[in-house]
Length: 136
Image (tube, rainbow, N blue to C red; front, side, top):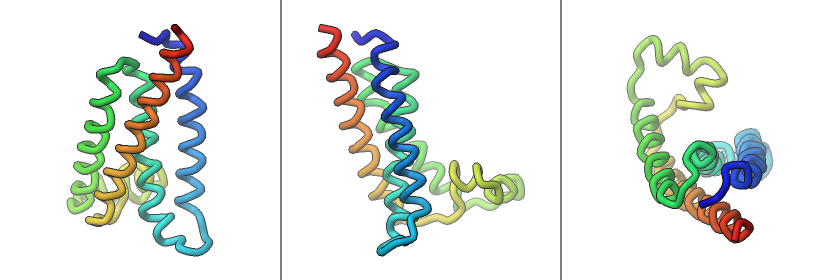
């Protein structure tokens, strides 16, 4: 099992990279910006949540469970965009609300959530393997 400082030392730079890339994709204005803004950023959104959860749960079993739970939760959030009660509408008008729960339902988000969770799983596996090898 990895020591917590070793894993955190590897995971925190990963989180920072993913956050930077996610914002870059979200606010990119060049060619194909619609895809980058709407769907490419969703891939990084999934990876971000996988890495953040990995900071809290640092074991081999978590590597399989985290991407699955992230996928389920983000799918629930996507369907929640079809519901428009006043308290959610008010939260969606804020920047953090828009970033966290979104405002527009799209079926095309789901394949990108799958891609993000698969890449997140691969990333977690790499971090765990790298840290385990360093510890040995």
